[in-house]
Image (tube, rainbow, N blue to C red; front, top):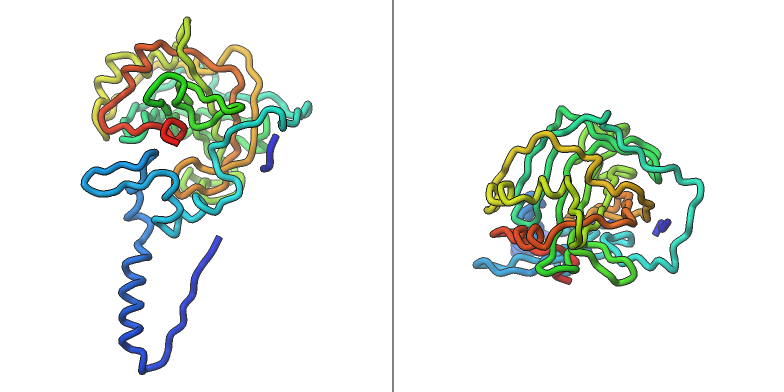
Length: 289
């Protein structure tokens, strides 16, 4: 297990510096744009669509509210060096609480990744492992690369995977919603499940990535409702995990996430990998770095 902000104040007051004050005020208006105007102004890879859209190396530079992306000390994703891992025999197993029930939710093409968001009336919780609190599932993100073997955000000993499935949870015991949790300590828990091309494809991913579903979300902001999904089927039958304290892997990069990397990959088909290439979907961080 691994355990791995800033303000500027300017005081001007002399009457004779009125012009200077006006110039500085103009400069400030240009530089310090409210963060909400930047919400869509980032990508996993630098792109040009009439204007520059910054990739990961620039996230911490284009918006002061995202400074942790550049100066943070516990930033994710990481390349795990297994020779430096420490085994903790006292960590309990992960516990998935869903009561054996199947779930429904909505698939989205966000323009950056494919996202599945469970119906909010259905509670899917995870606890145990390194988590001292119960965390509620908010979203499942699927990160693909432009080619086989280069899609995951995380790497293990320098090796990446074709897909990284990220189950994003928030601490429901301490915070009322994911927005509040993402800004505060012990706020988020992200479980990553890796996938490669192989036989016996994962049945949960097959439901998410079949041709019918993918064609319904071919363009940015498209959505498609799915029913009767068994979340237990997403996990390998047996597995261990690697855990560390890190950050959100998207702006504003708050360092409030406990990452849990499942150590046994699941399988997808080459057809599913090819069909994921949706219009307006960006490559993942790992694929573009």
